[in-house]
Amino acid sequence: MLQNLHVKNLALIDEIEVEFGDGLNILTGETGAGKSIILGSVNLALGGRYTKDILRQGAEYGFVELTFQVENEHQIRELRELDIYPEDGTVVLSRRLMEKRSISRINGETVPIALLKEAASILIDIHGQHEHQSLLYKKNHLGIVDAFARETASDVKQKVLEAYKAYKACEKELDEMETDEAQRAKELSFLKFETGEIREADLKIGEDEDLEELYRRIVNSKRIAECVSEAYLYTSEGNDSASENLSRAIRAVSEIVEYDERASQMYDQLVEIDSLLNDFNRELADYADECEFSDEEFHDTEERLNEINHLKTKYGNTIEEILAYCAAQEKRLAALEDYDNYIEDLRAKAKKSEEELRKQAKKLSAIRRKQAKVLSKSIEDGLKDLNFENVQFEIGFAETKGYTAEGMDDVEFMISLNPGQPLKPLASVASGGELSRIMLAIKTVMASRDEIETLIFDEIDVGISGRTAQKVSEKMAVIGKGHQVICITHLAQIAAMADRHYLIEKASSKGDTRTDIRRLDENESVRELARILGGAKITDTVLKSAVEMKELARQTVKQI
Image 1 (cartoon, one colour):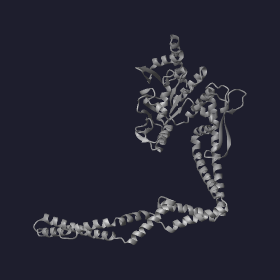
Image 2: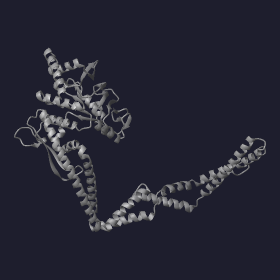
Image 3: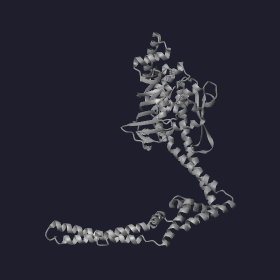
Image 4: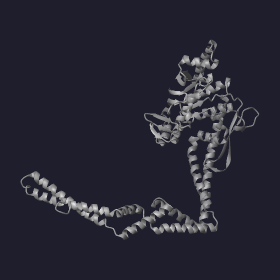
């Protein structure tokens, strides 16, 4: 559920904060008051595109923050898959908008815009003023069917996707292998050269790192030898060396060990230090010997490094990558050397993968067709509730010309709006206002299966009035029973159904214009309904009608 909206420095908004609640949250206001800015801000917070002119004049940045209360286990699981964990059941999405860039955050952590959009799709569904136009495109119809059939179809749909990838991989390999004899001969020669060059080098994993370390030691061997020699001089050679002075200290303390226990302990410590120093000096001498390199060693090391680096420029950035490339080329080489048998096996593999794809696609199609009957009946019933009295609605199925990652179903919504008219594609029949109601019917049906708790409708009532408006308001109330609904409307019938009613208004002061939003109490809500019904002048008769409409709405909600 969307709990809180905070907007700052966007368009006419200086700074607003809105607390939303369960059920039907209605937003109304006069034309030009800034209703579109409010929901536009929500879209921006969810990753929508913006231009610099959306920032309030004089502001360096704009800011939008949405706070969601998440209790639905399905949503929590989906968020965890994105590595998003609600904190005390809360997820906060925010976006800071600047002239040339934006910063997106989830629970205070900076995230890519793609992750913000993915999280948003789990938490909220926005139906904008023109989204119903998407119904005109047949390609969107399959997505609606699959969303409705998600519980029963998701596993099979995943199998179809995997089978499709396997099938396309076989197709691609066949295309790459089907060459003429001259091309094969040329490629065989080239592959033999590449694999021979790599195998002849006899590379060992980690060899390059060892050689580079050795090369650094050789190049710096003179400086290393000087420093080691100097250290050895201070610790082991000469009258003033640490070893000689330590020996003198041991002899001095040895003369008093019999007189005092503490002296005996210090003597033992000095002997131990002397032993450690002798060990160190032996290691230092050995290290000095190891740092002596001949010209031949330097030449061999440099040559080997050059050989490996040359192979890296051609076949990969690491020895592992070079060997992997070689293995792939050897596989290709073996296939070309036994071309006829390989092609035959590959064709058999492709045929088998196609059979598996068709099998899974048919399973998916059967599930879709079964669910589509339920969906089409539910949409048809919903349309009748929205004053399409003689409507017929069906979901048509045909096979695609080839396979796709979605299977082999070509789906299209078919509708007849008047008696005696045949079913025709939705795009060729419905007007804009009709499409809006059809989308509302679909959203209502989908709401019963959708795990998204918050639905936003931005003026879905455009182009409707009278009895149809009443039907739409009842449908919105139905959705609000099981979901949080936030709806911008200009119809009194819908506004009357509000569980919470908010007024968006614009005010000017000292040459500055600002948009604000506030929640209305019961009396204020009635007066706003009266304004919608009667315009600027609110008469007693209009006010009485508003009160009556509010009461009728309460009775209708109780009956739902």
